[in-house]
Length: 583
Ligand code: HAS
Ligand code: CU
Image (tube, rainbow, N blue to C red; front, side):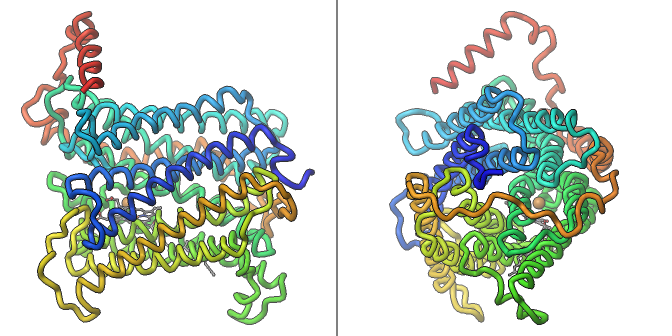
């Protein structure tokens, strides 16, 4: 077997490099917007008007939590399926087609967002990454999101098709673990993205085009959060795949348990969707009982991550002991802390542990009243997506990009400094956000309301918190720039030695130790569907009956059936779309 992925799969490597490059461009733009926000909110540097703050914040959110994360996901998952099945897609044209659809959708949404910077054209989408109605963006934004999501659905279909073809040649084999992780992630994604697709296609897009006069914001918010919690695991699970597959290898050991990893990913399929109302504890119009059910389900949802903490750390310990590590904790010293890919992922895991426990705080209905819509929540966001996911993706790239190019990583020492800088920056910034949230600082405000008077708190004043937030924001931006520079230099670096072997060592406890039922994907889809129906049918029905499908006192069919089939309707839609696109 050749020693790098690009030797074995040159065509795949090209597509995966494209996906990673697209992801990195989004990282660069999103990180720059993050710097602007951090300095604006703390009144340190305000090159933008406060009226533009929400354009910047929407760009920051969408380019980072949608484009950066999901383009990286499709790159990692394409690598994982190809590597573990030792098989290329059935038809590369289809593969390039879904990648192209994702890029096209992203461009449409980006045009709508970035047009917000100029009054020259009447297009904008200052709706933030959660695009809650009654905030309304240009139809282009929603059409772009729909095309992007369809692109991801096709990507999943491509991976299922590759696996299906593989099963024909390997009828009795268990699903290789990396492919199992990809397929279960996509099952979770198909189940959960139904919510956001319904919200946009049935309600928000027709409303933004002017086809319907009104909508029911509680209904569209609930459909968003039906999707909104699982989407965080759509960002997290590629990071988990790298922690399960690469971290043991980099530690010099082997994955502790394949069966436990399968159980973890099945738990995410079953439990990720029936919890979304934990983002809506303070929403009116949703009965407390439904909120209580979401809270209970959320507590069960801690299990897969706690199992991950155990398995991954046990695998790291195994690796450390192979390297001569001894003692209850002394083995930690034997880990390869000079390897940027390892240290970045280990630090990401440490921060994730802390961020996970703040998730438990969020999930407690009563304590959530304290932190909801405060700066605490962006603190949680940046320890989770901003570090567990983003730092793992950057650290993983230090191993993956050499595999995909055959080029040696340029600046290994700088790469180690970059991951440490990210860790220090995120500690400063999120510490400030968490503490600021606890004294009532609001989130999503260009002009924080507390300006002009200082809260005197035990740990210093708002001034100290602002300095921490700004300092953290600057360190993160510098770290992101360093990462992007190293990636660029490595892409164009000609020398190719030394590059790590691409082989992934077999787990200590392999698939043969896990019950075959774990691979029965149909069973898990069926159970997940039942749990979703139990968690959402009654709340959605009650929200729709209380506030109407399209708003109070609006007929459930605001556009009559006869109209829909008439030619006049088609022309109306075309005219209003054109009129809007030209707006
Ligand atoms: Fe969250 C809000 C609850 C996980 C992202 N979350 C958000 C928002 C985002 C987000 C973006 O219940 C804001 C949305 C908005 O704009 O309004 N979250 C949770 C819970 C978890 C959780 C219970 N969140 C995530 C992940 C995210 C993410 C993962 C992104 C990737 N979250 C909430 C709630 C809200 C919320 C409420 C609403 C707040 C409000 O009121 O608006 C759980 O999944 C967390 C489980 C994790 C753990 C940690 C396990 C530890 C591990 C570390 C292992 C260590 C290693 C390294 C590998 C219990 C796995 C060791 C190193 C060595 C050297 C040994
Ligand atoms: Cu959530």
